[in-house]
Length: 438
Image (cartoon, rainbow, N blue to C red; front, side):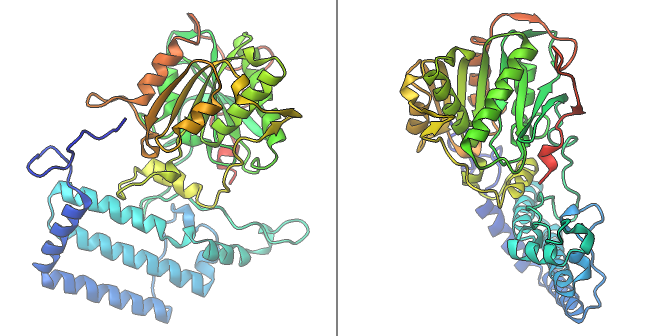
């Protein structure tokens, strides 16, 4: 499945967006045809770099840019100069692009590339510089025993010179509440957006150790929002940032979330939808339930083996996904599916649930095996197409998913009037605390 029509970008089709290579070629031509403007920007940049070296530059990050909110970025002479150099060079690149006189299509493509590159090379995304910033933190940021706090995780890559997308407003904005919080996870329950919902809940399992808003990016690009609007009862497991290690701890946490979903929806079965490392965990827990004779608790399972971090792109990454990628830059690799879990050896072949597998061509066979021996539908796509809202010109795996779920989540009934239920109440608005506790 490809989100791009075949032949995209062919010469002579005015409706196709320009390629990066073609737009870059036209930019080079435009700059060479305007030597005075190019020289002006070059001299201005050289002057600013000289002031930075002498310590007299007044450049400073935007107050709303929390990538550089730590005091060390402005207080430490070396770190301050690194940040100022980054700001000066990215501003110069943007100014040259603005003055090149390109048409709107070329300018949009190249501006996205400039922003992406600037975000990737930002000092706040450099682990060595982040460690220096943490080491120069004031005493109140250290622990009770005087140990230096852990270096801050990579901040989200906002478009250079602008603020981060706000988690809970710009991303992870689908309405809902935290209805259960443990030391390992928060369980989010989303507000229905239809008058009726399917009887069986859909429990979305985010990748452990990663921000859960991959499943709830900006409105119109949110998988959670898409499922809610399709009439599903959606709950989501948002992991504590430190929940990346012991498989038994993660497995028991998922069983606890399954208990809560059944309690809230007043049902004995749930559809579980795992994403990335959450799909590995889902497969492991399902095999464990099969081993102990309880796999009927899972009405069906969806394993989404896609990871945007493995995608190959041309530099045009949407801002919400670019921020998530930066937030996960230093995240450890998931543990994969263990050989045993909670004292039981795991045999995927013992699983007989209906399954849907969405995976890259290179991985689809492995994921299909993890889904078990029951009826398994396979959708082959690419890591770059994790975000795949319906469109008129192509097939969307999100549509395949909602059609598949609709046939397995039971009859429709009146949507619940409150979030939680049966003694479980909203304790905080979504997306909760753990999504930002990194």
